[in-house]
Length: 328
Image 1 (cartoon, one colour):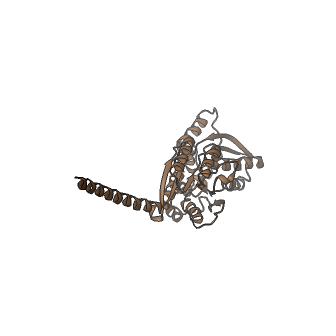
Image 2 (tube, rainbow, N blue to C red):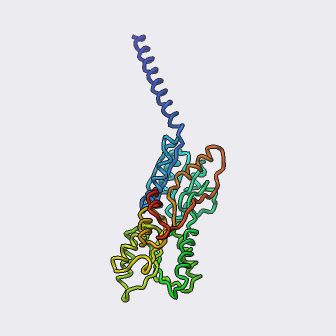
Image 3 (cartoon, rainbow, N blue to C red):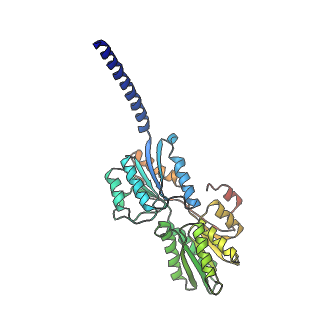
């Protein structure tokens, strides 16, 4: 009887060892992957969707990564929760596309204390200690705004008065702050420019359509509008929709719509002449983020700030070939 008990125990021990060995091999395989936790703003625009797709395309198992992706649904509190969860999961890197610039010191300090590098993508964060993040990959939003206002200065050089409606992006986001400041600075430099109204479009088509429609309806006299300065393409779509509904013509000889991003749909409207100026903001940032991580993995130090190359388009410069080759 004792021999039978010993035999059963030996079989049980051997089975446990086999299971542990299998689990160990499985964990070892997973440990070979670089784990990246990504906190994305949401899916509020075509640009944002393309940015997400670019990120997911590079952080694949085939490329040596395991991606943990979180959609914050436009709530900063969700981003804080996601980052803290990534810290608990002991990811190798944290990538954040911040909703707004403020409020990041505490959670980024937690990531730093856990020894996890943080890469800020697209929008920036305003922190007291910039060592809380390893690198920023994105665009120079103020420069984008300057490109737009320089075009406006040339386009309306001979105009006695230029009436402008300004549609801001998500308030407090880096893109909104940069593009807004560029316009405000240009307004001070051009005495013939008149800011009719400034609205929060939140980077969305629906909200922009609503605020412009309300503005037109609630004016006793039909507003004379020369320019609508939209801080992204989805806002431009909403602006054009509202303006045309109430009898305005968009384009040369009518309202000049200015937009940022240069998505495929926007470039099509630019080629048609409905968008007069399209300032590029490239969402395909995934490869640049991967380069930052690859540099660190190789023992190097990545550049702290990395900006993508961007251009501007007008109806005269957009071609069908450019549109067909657009990835977003």
